[in-house]
Structure formats: C-alpha cells, structure tokens
Image 1 (cartoon, each protein chain N blue to C red):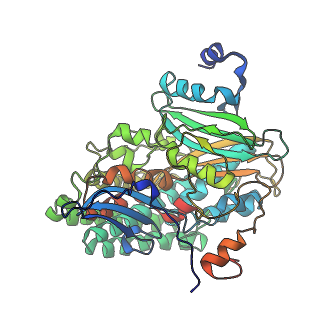
Image 2: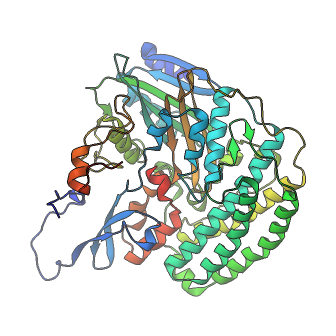
Image 3: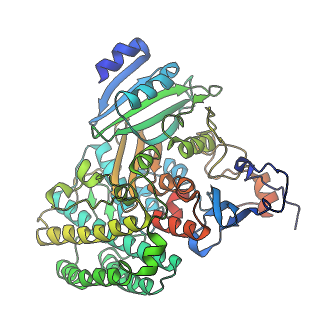
Length: 159
Length: 386
C-alpha cells in the first residue's frame, strides 16, 4: 500500500514509518485532500476514527494535524500527519467522512485551526463568544476569558 | 441581572421566515435541556419541529467541559490516571484500562498475565454495570419504571465488588500503569462466582419485563433507524454499530488485555433500530458473564505489577491505543516528548462521536422518539464534554 501511495505522490510523502507496530504517514500539507480521498476510495479506509492536532510552538509550522483512520475490510489503522502554520487553513474532510464534522469543530475550538469547506465551523465545547484556544501551548492551565466569565456568569472568576 | 448578550445558536437551522399563513405557522423551535431528566446529564438539544414531527436538531454540548486534555499536559503520566475515570463515570474501569494500556505500549512494558485477567474481569463487570444503568434509565425514559429498580438493585452488587477491591464504587482508579495496584481480596473469586449465579436469572427477568412487552415494542421498533453504511460514515461504534449488522468488536478485531484467551460471541442486530440495540446490549451482558465465568476460574498466579520505573519517562514518540468500551471505541492518542509529562493526550470518546448521529436518526420522527434515541445511543455527558 505504501509503495502504491509513494508511486502516486512521489516526494510529497515525507516519511512513512512504523512506530510500536503502528503505521503513520507524514505528508506534505499540499497533498492532504487528495491523499485522504485516495485512502478512503482506493485503500478502503472507510472509518475516520479521530481528527486531532498537536501544537509545537517552536516549529516554523506550528500545528500538526493528525487523522487517525481505520479500514473495516483490512482491519488496519493508519495515522496521517501534516503540518500547518498559524495562517494556513486545513481542507475539511467532511465530504469524505461525515464523522469529521464534530471532530474538526473540536480541533477548531481547541486550537483555532480553521477547516476550509466545513459546513458549520464554530466552537463546540466552549461557548461561542469565548476568546482563546485552550489546547495551544501558550494558553495557561488556569487561564480563562475573564470578560466572558464576568458578563455571562456575573462573577469575577470561574476558579 | 445584567444584560447578557444573546448567543445565536440556531443560525444553521435555516430559520428564514417564510410567509406566514395559518397552515404553516406551526413550525416551532423547542429547546430541550440542558437540565432535562431524559438527556442523561447536561445535553441541550434544539429541536425544529413541525407539529410533533422533528425537522432537524442541533446539539449544544460542552456544559461539562473540564479540559481533561489540557490537565493531562500538566500532570505526570501517573498523576493523570485518576482523571480518566471522570470521563465516562459509569464505566470508569474501561477508561482506566485504555489509558494504562496506551502508556504501557509507549513504555514498551506489558502487564503480567495475572493483572491482565483481573483487568478483564473488572472491565467486564463494569460493562455489565454500564449496560444495567443504560437499561434502567432508557426504560424509564420510555415509560417503564420497574426495570430501573431491578437494574439498580443488581448493579449495586457489582459496585460492592469494586468497593471491596479498590475502595471506590464509581471512580475506581482500579489499574496502574504496568498492572494493578491491588491484589484480589480474600474471597474475590467466590464472590464474583456468587454474583454470576445471582445475576444470570436477573437478566432473564429484565427481558421478561421488556422483550415482548407490547408498549416497549411500539416505542422501540423502527425508531431511530441507522444503517451500517451510515454508522461507518459517521464513525459510530459499539452496540449501535453492531445493532446495524456490523460484526465488529475491538475485543475480537484487535484483541488487547487477555481477551484472546476467551470464547465469546459478538451479538449483532439486523435493522439498526432502537429495539435491535436493546437486544444487542442484552446479549452483550450475557457474553460479559461468559467471559467473567471463564476468567474467574483460571486467574494465573504471579505478580500483578510489571517492572515500571517510579518516574516514568516514555521515549519520544506517539501511540494510539483503543479499546472496546461499553459505548464504543475509546481511544487514547498520546504524544511523548521524553519528559515525565505527556506532551499531548487526546481522548477519542465514543459518546461524542456517536452523539453526532442523533440528528440523522431523529429526522422525521416524533419528539417522544428523540427521548428514545438519546437513551439508545447510551451517551455519558462526562465523556462527550471531557
């Protein structure tokens, strides 16, 4: 499978490897929409298990978005990773897997990564008016949107 | 009261005002929850209705958001362990199992056989407890009060075993990274066996109350149908997926702990309706009993903890490990940067992803069916919101 993908995408696949028995692909962000489509249509990764992100503030491209996929016909998992900078937007995979809808909303909510083409991109766990994205590394663990708390809860602090 | 800004949560429901005539003036937006007995916690559902017919729904979640994933980045691997119990708080043992196994994989250690057997027994007992709680509350939502008393009475026996084993009934923190921290107590095997003998006829009793009950059939047959294809597209797992006819259970597909040692079947349904999901869960309870029965007789001797450093520093790398929790696939994606604290912990909660299917399942149904479908999805808001 990896060989097939390599043949199609050439040097765009930066790394294809196995760690602790789990396959992963590090892909160039420009390849992502086609690669995910190919993985579903040709390699039968029909179940999008999870979409999440990791924040690396020291890197040039700060966000690494991770797609965890599973194939029912092959009983196999794969992780696809791609890096994005703060100004980039990630192509939405809702047209590929409807399951991506809430998962992408959560990534947007927690990291502030916009997904291009998402049907209804808005916060999911935090209130709509909240400022900041808590899972970024520069967001403190007891930090909160003081203004929102004061206006909506009528108290000085939520702690 | 200060003036609060109104938050427009209903924008996507296409609320364009069309010309009002007497006939189409009955389109209605109704707010259900977050404080509502049938939403099993703090779930808010905005319903768009035409009379009593549901045209669309929107879930508003996050009322129970505690930032578990953020907390994980500020705790050591060991310190974070009790937090995972607070996600799916009716199946805390499963949460702990998934987390411990994920970190063990990252550390490249394996729990000893004895610990794995104890893990399987407690996890299956917990699956039983979770399904019992589901059955009681689901039946109550639909209008059958009796099963609630029956299931809570019997669930108590499981909680007593947990309490005796680790001192806690719900948020058990039963496992440690590398094995179990407690040896089984004196008479553990005897008590579990006694429990099996006690509970097997009780499950028949629940079925007698509901399986052929005409009201139950009317309320659940063909309600909240979802096909296998739709389940897979929406990422729905667990009993909901199996009730639609997909024979997929992570305990068989990618066995973990000691599950490959035991014989058990994967119950599947055909129609993917609320009744099939009920049947699948009832059969799953019996299969859990089967697994416990096999495991309890042959718990191997030996240590219960593998050699794990007091200060854990997993090598740099990532792991995704998932288990079959009572509600579906519960996954942990952990990124280690080589320090004592995880760099990132992502929890893939089954309830969160399954809840996404609610909108599809209730379109065209009645308001009363929404209650039935929320119940049949078996969500726990602690896990949806984390």
